[in-house]
Image: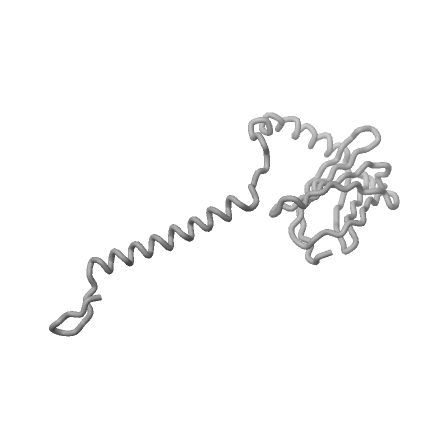
Length: 164
């Protein structure tokens, strides 16, 4: 700033305003550039490879859901310090046995930690696997297949609160 010769006060000139504007927009561009970089270098957010094909399969998903409802299974999925547990019973409360149970574990916020596990029947109607998972948010896509080919599918989202 220039000093006013008569009063000694500093004067704000057009050059000062220009420098303030350039500085302000430089900060805005730098922050936007950093955010854009981190957005593109982290998780892609891709849910479906081809949305059109996924939309065409919608009716088959609805039909599968109706078949699943007819099974009348009461199923519960949980995790503990040791691993994953899946409990399933029919509409009368009897345990459903001899299922092939697969769970696809995914990290919605990270890539590279996905895994597919097979749960084994530990007692009638109870299926489990001993697998310790890192702490954080997990999505489990569970598929239970009976000997007759009937399928039961469900997605679960849970937070593993402690590193295991």
